[in-house]
Length: 121
Image (spheres, rainbow, N blue to C red):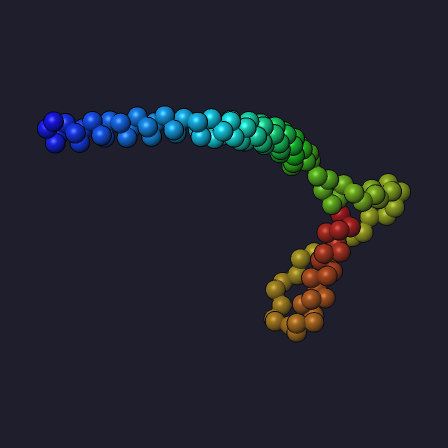
């Protein structure tokens, strides 16, 4: 027999033996792979459900935040009581000419007076 044919024949026999022997060990591996696939699929489905729930909660929170932003907030003057009609009105001071610079304490005092007048309006 030709040495080339001997090599090809022996390679074919070895390949057939390896394929035949390998099938017996693969069934257990296939079964474990199927079981792992089922476990991973169940985990994936649970995570999908959790994600959908989180998306719904986020959507509800976004709608709530948008509604709170859209709601008018009362102006500071709306929260105070209206002065009684019978109460005498305070006379407003006329604006004075600009005076030379004063001390810091005097400027702060003047700011407070102005703020109080605006609050009274």
